[in-house]
Length: 590
Image 1: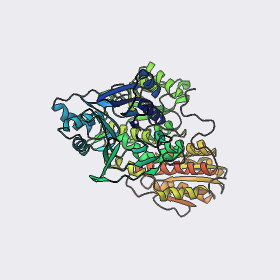
Image 2: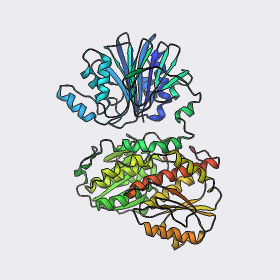
Image 3: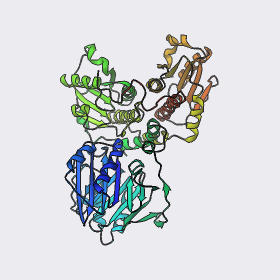
């Protein structure tokens, strides 16, 4: 979730690059930088934090006339958000910017270090430019192609080198990259937004595309053969471009979950199980139990984690609501690991609970999406979720990645290897057109009741809570999540045709018991939508998930469906899905 900009032309290149980065700042704002090639010299500037810091740092830098430039705004995956880790990255005479994850960067780095090549940063990106120069014998383009052939993973790459100062090299595999043009100007970007209003035509590169620009001529290769350029007209709406064609940022972020789950796993699983570079097992010495503390969606993720940790690691785990924790005069034991979960890292209630735990001498661990945030700085250790920027107020991919991190942690602590299952989650989170169309059609039947029950058992209970919260947040309809077995202890009194029940029915976990709970509601004439692999005769509506042999694969499929259902109901009601009333993205007050 980073942003790339490239420019070739003579129209104030520094401002072109900075303006482009500002349009992409929603993709990452840990750090930013640019490199400009002019008169066979490379001029580079980098800064930590938002684009304004880079702008200030480069304010006295002047450049006029024709030049080539690359720029990047970063959301940290490998290495902390420091100036050294910021892009562009350098070798002796070349510079590169990169989006994506180079999965085999460690082996590339080790190979090059054995050849006496030194690395400065903690990033995977530096391996690209160092490998390029290592491969460079005579022909720069051949060296670039050889470098691409050695990279495993996802990448969008722009590279400049003094060995060919009038050329910009580019490549795309799994991360977005486009080329745009306007008269004698050529642009590169990772989305439409930076080039709308500046260019008229665009080529959206396909995976495996690569090439170079030299003397204002674009040479594009696909399947190792040069192809004819095929231009299309750029859209004119910048917000539409940022949304990459989706109607709302929330919709885009639901679809992104397949990709961000992959990013969350990078470097954390191998053939032996789970590994975290953030700490080693000694950090957990003396720990007898765990307390998880969070608010809202993060609390629901923490509840899933409490099931997984107790089941897989056999460690007693309790759960606390951040806004309540401090006021119950908690008894804090130094043998307790205190885990806090926050998307933003600035959630005030959770931060204050963390301070209390720190003051009591507990070991603390943060699960967070924003490096260098208040919670991350305060906690002893941190696991970053790598979800990328989340613009929709109602959290989706943050929840998905928080649950994944907790699942990894449960297996790490329990020396349990479920990697064969974990690696299937990304696929389970893919949204098919058929599924989305079914949910769109169903949504019109669930607009005008007197409330919703979301029910499930085990980990599907916190998913029910989260599904109900999503619906409340963006549709403004009353919804509650319940453990399915609790319905008969009071709530079933509300059952009638205008009470809508969303039943999460796992084939792999407590199937018969949950099925019985659904039938209890059906016999009271509640309107029921069941999400399961198996059709239930007494249900009114049914969304079928894929057959799988593990409940967590079912969990992630059901998660996607509940998110889409809430969104489609909200759209039919005419609400602002991305900015629901009365809510803010980061709750920094108690």
